[in-house]
Image (cartoon, rainbow, N blue to C red; front, side, top):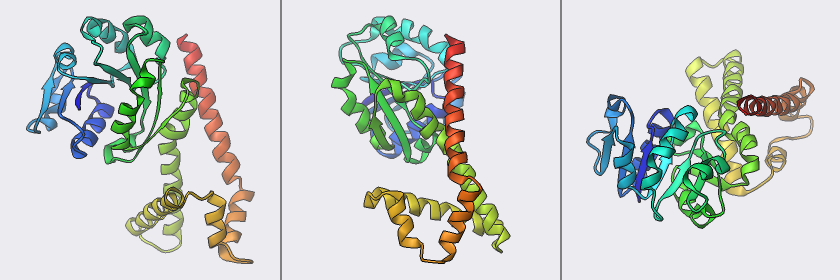
Length: 266
């Protein structure tokens, strides 16, 4: 695949690393106003660094935008004359809706929005995708890209705000849970390094049980709990203290905040 990443900041770098590591490119153009910021990619075969967005667009079929929201409209306007029927436009810009992109480049273009999370740097992103009507014809291309960088799910654009909370902010929520587990393990006698190792790999194992077996979490919980046992005692104490309700309330609060930000921008 001939891919360009316009705006190779933190997210753009993570995407680039994933694409290179997984051999998902024929050519890869990376753009940045200060090219020194992406010098780490020099020397990779078929990877080209440039400050020229037009050069990148002209030499690519798939164009991934990872720029700041304030710069996106100007960049789209700049490249519009050079977008051809072969180009697939993939935006990772939060809150910049498809109808707005269509206003600038036209409804006849293949437009896809992607919402990855920071785990894309290690090939474990949960990426949500949506598209315009034309983009539905190329959504499989986006799925192929982001499935190499983790897992993808196509959803309506109306759910992208909620997906931002569950998947992008969700990384922070899970980190906090892992940190709390680490702190508990330290209190129970493990040193800090061992405690974090126990927490990390236990959480990874829990997720993989659900991914591989396709079970509901309660099914896996039932495998661990025994009558009058230590697991059910711990779970009940956590629920009495509001573990599930606080998680739900926190995610809903995050969703309300992102909606308020959107209203302020409008």
